[in-house]
Image (cartoon, rainbow, N blue to C red):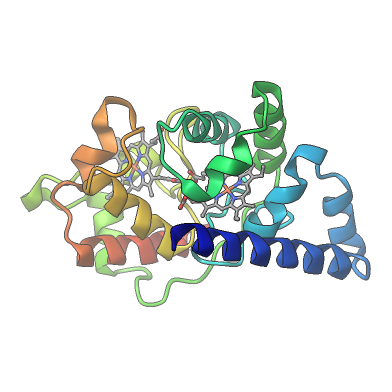
Length: 210
Ligand code: HEC
Ligand code: HEC
């Protein structure tokens, strides 16, 4: 079942990649981006977008993410310290140098955000991001991820503009103990007392951050 699901994902990724390349032929700017993609990163475009701004909510945007963080994730996934059945086979053939090259490439791309659905200024999502949930002992996301979610290299990733769907899945994965690659259990502790509604609200706010 699972294997079938991933086979479908990879096939649709390849179709998207082909679409992206042919689209680029009639667009000079995009052609530039595509022609500068290092060979090791050609396959990534299908899911993460030619410039790392994935258009599919379940695939994270990786454009403008700090290179050190991207590299850490790739190494963690390759070593199965962070479980990702989708990415596992893709990173397996990459050397340390390849991972550094692709991380540098995506870190240099300009990130694009997606408007929040209902958590703009003055929302619950903004409150959680900026001040946390004091009653539940949840710290402000901004304290580690930066006032605008820009991240603090090398350890604290950029969150701004990320698809709410992906942010939600990761915060829940930390909370439920499925993702355990956070130094000093930082995210596992932050998320422990968050409800699904808290997570959805803050993820929606983060999506709109630039
Ligand atoms: C078939 C789709 C697919 C392809 C192709 C793919 N990825 Fe991914 N990638 C994902 C998914 C899905 C995740 C989220 C983790 C998960 O749910 O398994 C992810 C996660 C990541 C992450 C972690 C992002 C974060 O914010 O923590 C990085 C970095 C990454 N991919 C880089 C790459 C690179 C580099 C390539 C090409 C060498 C690549 N990916 C190819 C689907 C894909
Ligand atoms: C005490 C510091 C700290 C606080 C506070 C914090 N985080 Fe994090 N967060 C981290 C660290 C460190 C990582 C990187 C984990 C790793 O290395 O894989 C991270 C990673 C993440 C990720 C994964 C990013 C990705 O691209 O996969 C998400 C999503 C996230 N945090 C959301 C939040 C939200 C939402 C809040 C507020 C409710 C928050 N964080 C508060 C330290 C923190």
